[in-house]
Image (cartoon, rainbow, N blue to C red; front, side):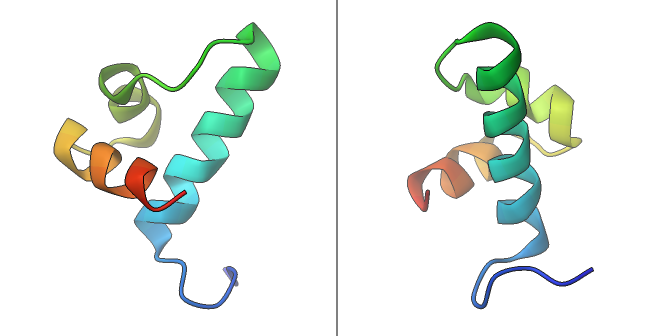
Amino acid sequence: MSHAPGLSDRDWRVRAAVYRRFAETGEAPDADRLAGDTALPPGGVEASLGRL
């Protein structure tokens, strides 16, 4: 799978989950919930959210 330059697979999954959740619910990102959506630990999600 090809992603934007410099974007890790983890960051890509988090970004996709953020957009998907916002489109479905209008809610702001929640690291704990996104961890479940992306199969990542909450700390990894928080780190990726910081790079968005």
